[in-house]
Length: 165
Image (cartoon, rainbow, N blue to C red):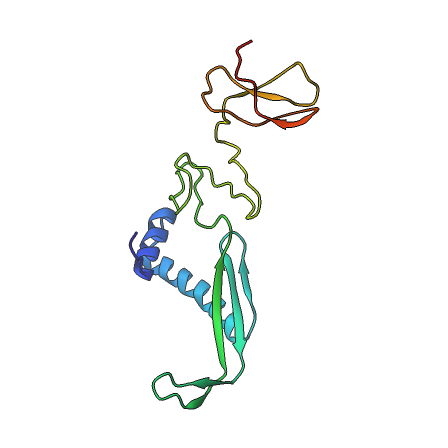
């Protein structure tokens, strides 16, 4: 992934919209200038589908010089932070999303809860078939499955029988 400059963005706008690079540059300058003015006035800027620019104020506070250990005063600051919108990076549904650390290879971006074990909805489920002898949801391993799985029945949790029926 490479870094793009303002010139690259102007070139892309000019090419897509069929306008001159000068007109595209002026339009981009107007948009960025308007965002900058709103942030200077202390207002947050929300661009739907792109992200939020927020102004954060930090108060003056005591700090410590790590080299000498003396106490110093850290000045009050005003910072601008940006938080991208959820779908900002995925603008064209025809192109696959970039892979991210921990994302499955088949392209599912479903994310489970931190505290519960879940399976991605689009992944195939393990081979398990329902046993019709009980109405309590007893599950038995399929004939192709070589692993033993716990089952539930009226009497509670048990191992499935190993005898073939």
